[in-house]
Image (cartoon, rainbow, N blue to C red; front, side):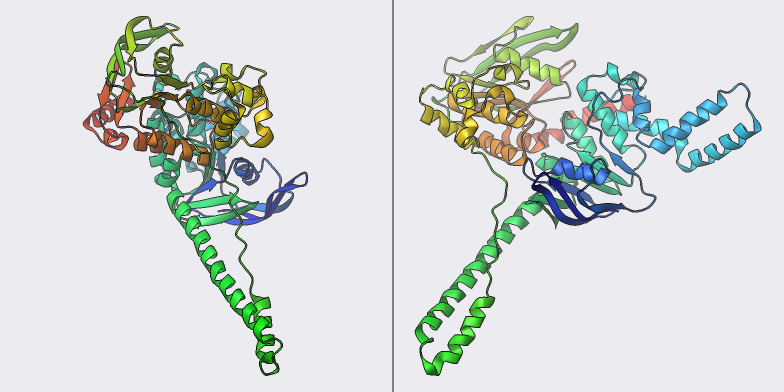
Amino acid sequence: MISANGVTLRLGKKALFEDVNIKFTEGNCYGLIGANGAGKSTFLKILSGKIEPTNGSIVITPGQRLSVLEQDHFKYDDCVVLDTVMMGNARLFEIMKEKDAIYAKEDFTEEDGIRASELEGEFAAMNGWEAESDAATLLNGLGIDTELHYKLMKDLDGSEKVKVLLARALFGNPDILLMDEPTNHLDLAAIGWLEEFLINFENTVIVVSHDRYFLNKVCTHIADIDYAKIQLYSGNYDFWYESSQLMIKQMKEANRKKEEKIKELQEFIQRFSANASKSKQATSRKRALEKIELDEIRPSSRKYPYIDFRPEREIGNDVLTVENLSKTIDGVKVLDNISFTVNHDDKIAFVGSNELAKTTLFQILAGEMEPDSGSYKWGITTSQAYFPKDNTKEFDSDLVIYDWLQQYSPVKDITYVRGFLGRMLFAGDDGAKKVRVLSGGEKVRCMLSKMMISGSNVLIFDEPTNHLDMESITALNNGMMKFPGVILFSSRDHQIVQTTANRIIELLPNGFIDKITTYDEYLASDEMAMKRQIYTASVEE
């Protein structure tokens, strides 16, 4: 168990947390949610001991081990992958190293033998003999092939490092597990594996995530940060949302009844306060009136943008034809003879573990990269808006937001442009910020404004939820579902894929699968069952 007792954290004059009391108990998974800037990551750092609160304390049950998902992807670059995972249990790894050092001695003494015996006893008690196989199982479950287990961390790519650090946090059955955005940079298969792991995990989990489907799947409780307080709710994310909305509704209804009562008492007092025979009753009602207090209903600090993609012209039947597209990058063939036709009512989710293949395909279709062979052709009625995974070059400019967006607007009117920015929560002087200094989330909202203002009837999204908060992801999801045109997209957000896509294309190392289906139906399909069997067999070998 881990608890916060009277925790307050002040940053200058601002209180990020004020007298927070909350207890996280064994066997539960807590989703820590709140608007951007509410302090979710900061609270995890307070729980882990990386930040000291201004007041209050964090208490952990004596003898329990706490594990934290590391955010520094370069911290273990000179370590072997398997060792990095086993370092998740610091004491066990320390024993392993000390044992190896003792047994490597040429002049092995009696004292060394006694010490080695003590270490062996502790090692066995911690299931040390299964450590390497347990670490390998975690890595394989997350999609890190056995051939990578003995490489150095610096030899892995970014997404592979994220998976290793996640395996490190999960290793050794920690009593308390703290995870900040564990699904970032994971493919959908790895996210699915993590969901099952956490569902079966019997200890305490506290997780920050913007993935609503993930929170619904794994969480038993939601801890909601708002106005420097943390309110605990039983149930998953959807249950929290319904409960919080119901609570506000009930408070408003209670206030309405109180206001009616106040009005009734005030009218009686006004009518009879000067009446001698009724003066006692009037005085009694005055006292009753003074006791009535309306509940304070503070609006949530959460803000939802309004995302609405409206195509300027209706799309025809001839949308896109792709024939035998192939592309090799740095000696690796990432696209191999890809062919498909897009219909006028398609919303296609491109899935699969190869992130580079999806990004390369979108770059080719957006005209930013040439294929090595093959061709593609857009229909004459189509117009495309592209959301790249890496938007760095889009904001390599000294323009302010207003001027940046106006250059893409068909209507060169600042009021028109400000309307689009206002929908995306850029109000007042926000539009005068230089685009070069925007945060990741602000840049994404600018890119979505650009796509909205374009009036395109084909939208191409490459991981659009990166850097977005829960409210913006929800707004984007709604905008994608309402869009009457064609969407080609990739996303790690399960709920966006499930609610938006009516067709799934999975890019594989040796081809692709193309199915007209929802994502959940695809995951339950025979093709996926066959893939799982092949994968399980390869892991066992």
